[in-house]
Image (cartoon, rainbow, N blue to C red; front, side):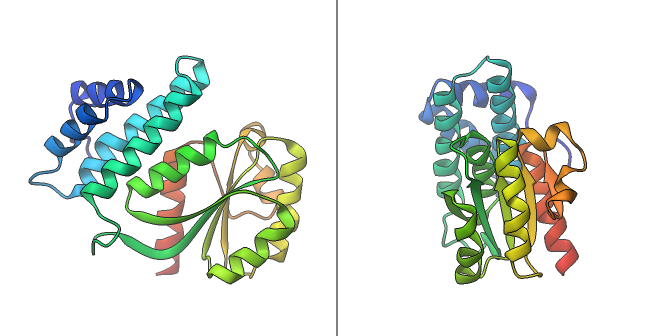
Length: 212
């Protein structure tokens, strides 16, 4: 999809998020929405901004608090643009996201924000003990499960989680260990691996298309 937002607008939106200027961010997003699909405005303004802020944090150019607040502001703005009750919201498939046996929540926060901004409803399980996940997935009828892990011991526990899930559940993983080993996700039984927040969005869409 072509980039519909001039870079100057993207830069201004990103700056508004970094300075927690919700009013300015709302004004910029509203200016992009009239006359086009709201999702186009989201994908060409909100998602690129969140990705850039995530990259800023990885380089040490943004604080953790800025990343958190940027995601929170974007979720609120998109909820206003596309209310949870809107027919444009994508209630299917049933998505859930969790951090496995770690306390590192930044990656999950970015992925959650991007998926919510793209119109998906997402169950946020937060930090979960691996043994609890299969039961939660069955209880909630989850069809796609996104898992994040920071340390290798947590990654190895994902293999047991996947093995205990219903076979129809699609699993995508992300986190530092998976960046260093391109085939690690296969070893734990996952169906896909993401390295950025936008990867998660592409993976979900691929899963949906494959199931159609």
